[in-house]
Amino acid sequence: MVKAIVLTTAYFAPVQYYSKFLKYNKVLIEVHDHFTKQTYRNRCKIYAANGVLQLSVPVKKDQTKTRLCDIKIDYDTNWRKVHWKSIESAYKASPFFDYYADDLVPFFNRKYNFLIDFNTEIQNQILNLLNLDVSIQFTKSFKNYYSADYDDFREKIHPKKVIEDNDFTATQYMQVFQDRYGFQPNLSIIDLLFNEGPHAQNILKLS
Image (tube, rainbow, N blue to C red):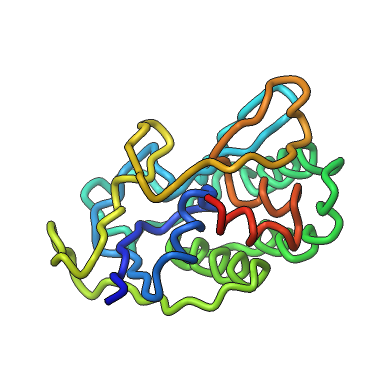
């Protein structure tokens, strides 16, 4: 019997996150947990000219103990322009930037009220670009624990913590600035897409 997996929502999630979509037939996205800062829920890591760069989507203040599904994005700053310019600068020399740029730039031209809607549409597009067809559902309520039929990865894929994952290996691939700082593992899925293009799914299978 193939297990299901429980994941948090994520903004341009890392390679480790997307490798799970090849290992599980059913994915459950947690939307009823309390929003936690400094997680992949609203940030990603890309490989820029000066090394690894974190991009964070600002959210409205005073949302402490707010359910993730109710978290609103803050547009008081022009972060969308900053994020896209950072991505463009980091990957314009990559082999497949021109191939995928038009598929991703619309996310930085449209305003989304809720973070979950923004992340979900990004995820759907990424899965489409990776040619992955996976059964995805949202949680209907919050559970502290899941049965043995589920692998709970809600807090196991984290930008600030290295948590052991026996089912993931950071398979190396060519990166734009690898000659400067070496291979940087488990960056945002866009790093893999821009550098490997249609071969990205094969990298995920090896990961």
